[in-house]
Amino acid sequence: MRQTAILGGSFNPPHVAHVMAAYWTLATQGVSEVWMLPSYRHPFGKVLAPFEDRVRMCELAAAPLRGLHVCTAEADLKDDPLVGKTARTLEYLVEKHPDRRFTLVVGADIVADTPRWYRFDRVRELARVIVVGRAGEAAFGDGPVLPDVSSTVVRERLARGEDVSSLVPTGVLAYLKERELYLE
Image (cartoon, rainbow, N blue to C red; front, side, top):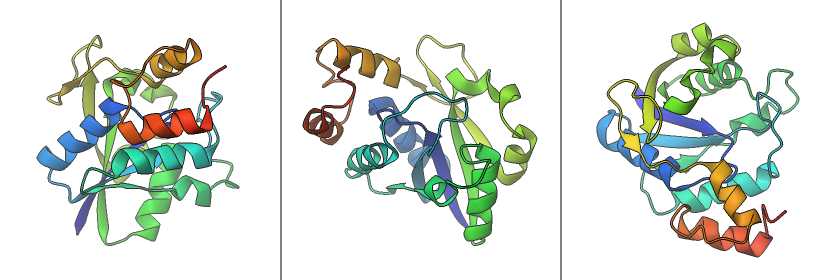
């Protein structure tokens, strides 16, 4: 069976720590590919940039890294009342790709939220779960500790007109400027 890791998130916008997490997963976790999976709708109702913009930014972030791809499965589920729920998305992916085994990559910053997730027990049945850390977060597991970069910080800096060139991949930065995203 093919081993595929899912790196899900709102990617609002994707940043360098997302790409670093994907690279670490490809290099160390025995997977043949990582799929960045932008959420169609945020599971806790946060406002997001349009899905199409976030997908395009993920494509731009993924382009330089062989084995990193973008999966738009949640768009297929947009009319499902459970869209955005990881368990539902994994059920869909397992059904659609029976030749694959899935690993779910999550950040240490959201581990505390898993009790609020819809059917986290089901998530663990459908996929191996690995955790990557972030500087400033409590240590968790044996995964790497990535730089303390967040989409929130990127959006805040953009809104203030500050430079984010060290926080987002070059292609994403060009897209952000072209589309004038997160300026308000």
